Amino acid sequence: MKSYLGIDIGAGSIKASLVDTGGNILKQTSRNTGVETTEKEFLDSLVNIVSELEDSSLVAVGIGSPGPIDTENGILIESANLPLLKDVALVAHLKKNFKLPVYYNNDANLAALGEFRFGLGKGSGNLMILTLGTGLGGGWVYQGKLFNGYRGSGMEAGHVTYLPGGSLCGCGQRGCTEAYFSASGFLNRYRETSGAQLSGAEEFFEKVRTADRIATTLLNEGIDALSQLCRTLIHTVNPEKIVFTGGLVKSWDLYGDVLKEKIHGLVFPIFRTYTQILPGGNVAGALGAAALCMENHE
Ligand SMILES: [Zn+2]
Image 1 (cartoon, protein in one colour):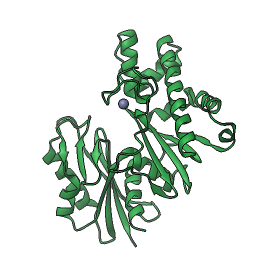
Image 2 (image 1 turned 90 degrees about the vertical axis):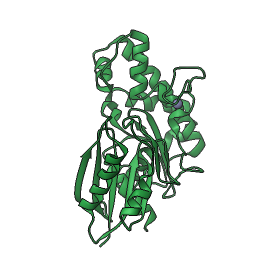
Image 3 (image 1 turned 135 degrees about the horizontal axis):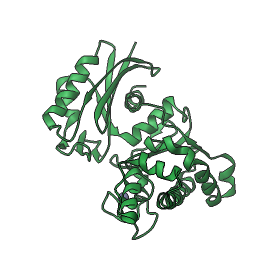
Image 4 (image 1 turned 120 degrees about the vertical axis):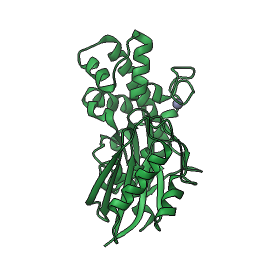
C-alpha cells in the first residue's frame, strides 16, 4: 500500500492528512499558526507534522499555501496571514529532513486538483475552479493535468480586469475581478461606501440577508464582475464545469442563481446548453495537497 501526506497551510493553522491512493484519510493532525509565527517555528511545525504522520507506506508529501509562491524552487515568497515569513525555502527544508519527494503549489491549484479527484469535478476532462475566499483564485485541470503556466503562476483569474481604473485590488492594480467579488473586496468597498468596517464576509452577507441597501448593491456589482470573468473563461477554455469553492460558497443561496442567469446571458447559446456552473468546496485543502502527490506518482 502507498500513502500520501497532504499539508494545507491556511490562515490560522496548518492541517495535514495522510491518505491512501483512494483518498481515504488514515491519520490527521494540525498545528496552529498566526501573525507571530516565525520562520523557525513554521519550519519546525512542518517537520513535526511529517514526523508525526509518516509511516513506511509514505511515498510523497504535497503542500499547498496561499500565494505568491515559487513552485519551481519550492519557496513561499510571502503570506498575508503569516507576515513574518519571507522567501521561506520550505521544500528544501523538508527534503533535507526526510528522504521523500515534496511537491508544492498554491491553494487554488490544489483546490482544483482536489475537486478533480474527489469532488464535483471528478473525472472531468476540462475543469475550471474559482475559489471565493479572502481573495479570488483560479485553477484549471485540463485532460487530467493541472495547468501551471510558464513558472507556476497560471490562472490568476481573480486579477482579470473587470473595470479599468476601478476599485483598488490587493495586488496593487485597479479594477480586478477580485476587488469586486471576494471577502476583502466586499469589505473594502463597503468601508469606502459607508465608512463602516465590517468584521468579515459573514457580516457582509448577513447585511445582504437583511436587505441592507449598500451591501445588496455591492453584491450585485460583484455578481456582474464574476459573471464577466466566467464569460471570459468559458469563451477562452471551454470548460465542462466551473466549480466554485472557498468560504463564500456558504452564501451561494444569495447569489448562485443570479450568477448562473447572468453568465447564460453573456455567452454563446451553445455554451448555455452544457457548461455546468456548480457550488463545490467540500473537499478539504489537505486532500487537494495529497492529490498533487497522486498527480506526480501515477
Ligand atoms: Zn488584482
